[in-house]
Image: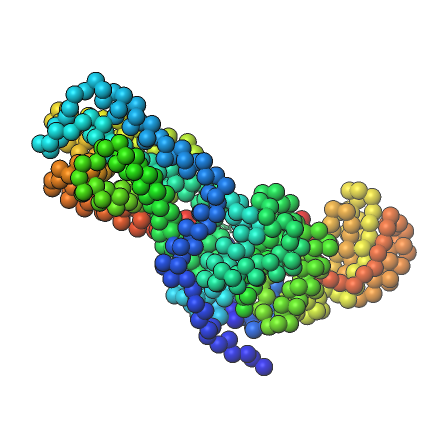
Length: 304
Length: 268
Ligand SMILES: Nc1ncnc2c1ncn2[C@@H]1O[C@H](COP(=O)(O)OP(=O)(O)OP(=O)(O)O)[C@@H](O)[C@H]1O
Ligand SMILES: [Mg+2]
């Protein structure tokens, strides 16, 4: 569905994407993870065929975006990072008019609009002005809009940012169903639970490059230990105490509010910490998650 | 198993005409709630016609234009017709266009669909024309009702005002793409206001000495006024032909520049 080789994007002197290779197959859910400014949105915009490629090759749905932009976009659903709703129109007209941009016949688009309003739980707000919606409702409308043309490839740039937990779960459920219907999903996210839930495969981007690639499980196995011991000490003590527990695991990460000791046996780490006369305020042993992979690879937490 | 990507089946995408129609429909929806804005745009030249053409016209006996004697109101009316076509086009193509481009991000939204920057430029231009055309049609009706139309050539005045709208809308859209903030719109009034007052709208161009007259004759509003006046009075000359060529060129260049600028601004 998407095939990029040596893909680059420069804005003036600044290179936002510095040569990435990506292969997305039909029917899979593919994720881009990365800290702010990693180049995720820049990549998504190139895939959406609205941002010209600086160099490298990119094919979407078997076509070249520089040549066949309209034909590609006709089959894409796009949910941009920033809502670009039509604030002069009502909620329902946003869907209807957007569908008309795709050349979908009026009666058909009206039917789909009602269906999608139902799906994003905005049916009662159909006649309202967009401005009167809350941030999360606008997001839901943007997502509904991206589905109006029944896309083969759905591009979601941070789809659930600003949604409440219930709305997120509803959306995940719907995305999962779309995937089962054969829609290919490409999404960026800052939420590791979202990436773990939805993505078959993902890449971690940092400073315009891909630093790791694989399924969530593969990434965790390859870049982290089985377990993590979290140690919480007093405020400001973490930096100093890190040296004292360094040898207890494969690796130690210092966060502002806790120490993370990576080891295959977390309980063992805790026992040794106590043996050394250290008394953390709180301890927790858990399995490694994508969050840990992310921290390892980019030196940053996912949601900062 | 590696799946074959396969070339996408083409889906029908809107033709240029359909794309224009959709943008017109979108603009119609957004204006439906604000019809009174439409009305004020129509009334402005009518008020000028009554105050200056009829009111001030009482003080002026008659007038010679291209060798024909006409009343002052009949002289001023086509000027107002051209000016209203200009104003209608410029309003939509500057303020509204800027708002949609920079604040509402409407075109970012549209470009995510099969529509192109040319579709956007064309569609917005068509909207300006439609709006200007409705004004001009109404104004021509008022002129005819007041007996200020003295020739069958006036039938061509409506397409002429569309041409005027096309020229100004194209140029205004192109210039608007270079604007950075609302302050820059001072330049719009700075350009249109003197043109409105001095482009042979209220008095003949012969009142200007030498170089100044050439200058006035080269302004787009003067070309528009001449065209409209020659058509509504029936006193045609080559000046009209010059105007047609001038206005077509202005609109086409404006449209092409606007389209290129949209590419540069939006497809980054
Ligand atoms: N139009 C532009 N002009 C200049 N620089 C840009 C432009 N768009 C993006 N950039 C720069 O490119 C870099 C990557 O931006 P991008 O939006 O792709 O990051 P991101 O991974 O989506 O980040 P976030 O998680 O904050 O959304 C940033 O440093 C940004 O400042
Ligand atoms: Mg982004």
